[in-house]
Image 1 (cartoon, rainbow, N blue to C red):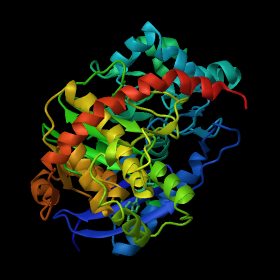
Image 2: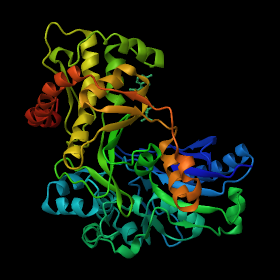
Image 3: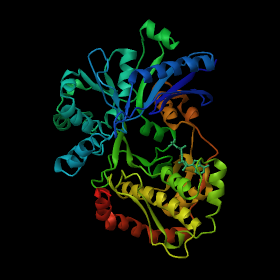
Image 4: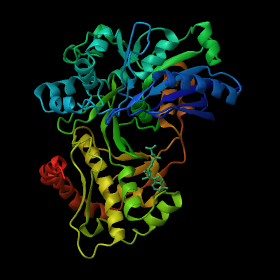
Amino acid sequence: MKPYILGIDIGTGSTKAVALTLTGEALGVVQNHYPINNPEPGYSEQDPLLIWHAFVKCMQDITARVGYAPVTVSFSSAMHSIILVDETGTPLLPMITWADARSEDIAQELRHSVQGAEIYRITGTPIHAMSPLCKLIWLRTNKPELFIQAAQFISIKEFIWFKLFGSFEIDYSIASATGLFDILKLDWSVEACKLAGISAAKLSIPRNTTYHRNNLNPDTAALLNISQQTHFVIGASDGCCANLGSHTTGPGIAALTIGTSGAVRITSPKPVYNFDGMTFNYLVNQDTFVCGGAVNNGGIAINWLLQNFLQKEKLTPADYDELFATIDTIPAASDGLIFLPYLYGERAPLWDTQTSGGFLNIKPAHTRAHFLRAALEGVCFALYDVLKTVEDASVNITQVNISGGFVSSATWTQILADITGKRLVVLQPEDASAVGAIYLAAQVLHPESYDQLTHVDNQTVIEPNAQNHERYSKLFPIFKKLYRDLMDSMHRLHELDI
Ligand code: ADP
């Protein structure tokens, strides 16, 4: 029986449990799904009890799959959720997820104020509807009775932790994504709490991400099918764990993901601020930050094009290969055709819900394949914009570790290498967030196994083509300027009632 660490990733659509032995051998993965509810436009809610049940089932399933219980369990979880609970940890309302947009107007007003900039500097969290700070302001105004009645304001990870240990505790990483936590003082921010209208006593006790507990009560241990002495590490957020799990920890290395949406993240010993681009600064631990930005328009923008213009309702891997093969003959920079990918509004670095997509500089010579190539380039330019924003405020990036669905396409990844001019490394460990949680646990509870557990070999490397990079370097400033030039018209179009 090889001892193993279980990484639990509490995601938005499912909870996953990944089992790795102390030598890094994968023993199995189990996953349990739950719904997201949208009772009103812009609302995104979940039942935290269903997530607890999914977690319990993951624990039971993995011990059944492997045949014995883990020695250590460690958590990663989605950021920005908020649950109003009473003193027994019972929810007073459904959980509000990161995707909930009901506090958009509040966020917008705050973002453009002096106070908003100060709150961003203190807390590292972009001022956006995803931020629990903005959600609390909305709740105070719109659900005043429940807001006053709430004994605690907690996230999904604290909800699960409370069910395990009966104590309201939060890791620095999840705390640093609330918009309420002072990321340098490592305590709740007086200013942010005042703005939210709450006392810090109604927030959980902040803990280091390697903080751990055992001594479960006998009933809980029996329910989870483990020993009472099993150690639980509180862990970090999914974004921070993903950086650890994808080995994006050294200086000059960035992680870049393109899935449905996209994100860029670096690891830094200090926060990296950009007051316009509002890049985030989330804590991995007291002296390590994950800094970066997320974009809305990743694969979702490409899929829109493929489905609507290229008549592909359901996309198979063979469809992507076939369609993307048609663009290899089109020169880099698509003969000047530019795609602004902002179909779904944009988060970093524009923070503009009213922006929209567009093709520009269309000429008679442009073919269907040009449009497809320009679309892939547009999505990569938007991510390069975030990468440059972070890089300009920190250190030179020499390597980009890539992950997400786009990694399957040699065409798309080469475009990204050529646009960024950086060496890309395909580092796609299955379930990087859960694996990152396992690495955190190994640091503190199994240090003798750490090197062996985290060792990777066989990396795929994609080098940029210098000539193509030069072409893209001429186009990129125009891509950036086009948004600024068109912003006003996009906003007017958004307001237009036709
Ligand atoms: P999610 O963020 O929802 O987990 P994925 O990481 O699976 O999504 O990425 C999904 C996106 O990846 C799709 O929207 C699509 O644009 C892209 N994609 C998926 N499969 C392929 C493929 N075989 N080749 C190129 N791109 C792909």
